[in-house]
Image (cartoon, rainbow, N blue to C red; front, side, top):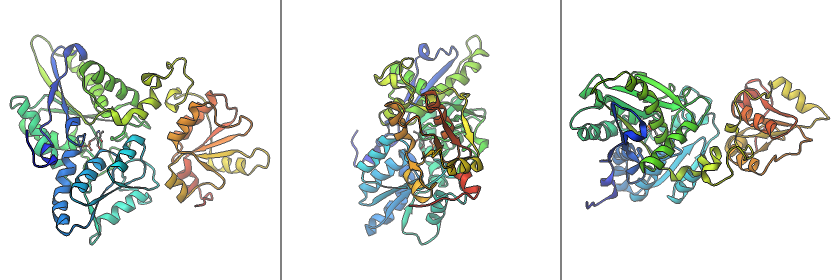
Length: 446
Ligand SMILES: Cc1ncc(COP(=O)(O)O)c(C=O)c1O
């Protein structure tokens, strides 16, 4: 294979059959579409190139322009490389860079990263208060100087998969569509584009979309609450949408890595886990020599997610075993652990009390904190908090602590963790900083 440009190596990824001894399905051939083997490392190489190509051709003529995208992961990675190849800059705008390795890699690739305060990791266009949404709207206004690829709305995102990923799957299955197609949903570009092609081939194809479980985090995909919010997502694409937890995603990753030699990241693991869970029920209803085929996508590789895995399964990376290890992640605490949750009015009274002087810890990102925070609070972003907790309780037991996060979900879990670790008075702010602001309570900025 000889190429004039690395972009020619995008696509034509392998379809690899998973050994039935691994998944245990008797009547179903399960195949992994290895999008991780694209040259920039992920399923997003195709849409990034498809969306950027027309813009880059124009900009390269003048040598001016910055490609910009709302992405904290794989799209940003591919676009940063493509922009660099064309002598242009790339700017990633996000309200949260949650995976440190990805952030560092983007910086290595020459990307500029702008982190805005925000509520969820994904763009919610209906939330006009969200700075990310406002930035997105500004980018879409005519006459702007940025080359905006607009992955959440750009039909070329879907088209990249309808032109490449889908037809490749059909060709590798000897001209037939699989009975099941399984994909994780981020922008919905890959699942929508592939489903379109497979259903054109055979309208009875079943499509399973996978999302992260409520309040859980699997880098690159939406949660069950976020999935209906935006752009390219059409519920008609999917026969079912099912949640996967981060622990299940890691289990799936481990099976692919340790048993199949496929160096998958968390969303590939989530797709494998979700696929096998659903297909077991299908398999049980098949008999004789009935055969079915199913395909899932392995979106990217494992190496960028070591800190993600470490925070959730320290024992996998050589740390002490889970049973013996101190609790260091809010995911380690059972969801029903009793926690003191305080409403805004109660919290204000508590903070104003002369004697108790609670320490207010704001768990949001630094930009969100800089924009608005509770006076006197300290900012410890949750990843750093995880690190601190690894060394034991980071605060004196004699000072009460109020934890605040964007909407009060994460702080509950950290409050449970700190309580488990022996702190006598940790409380979580109900509704988070958003609830505090909505109640008209005072906030200051730096
Ligand atoms: C790791 C990973 N998996 C899955 C997806 C989902 O792909 P799509 O945006 O096509 O829905 C993404 C998207 O960014 C991703 O980065």
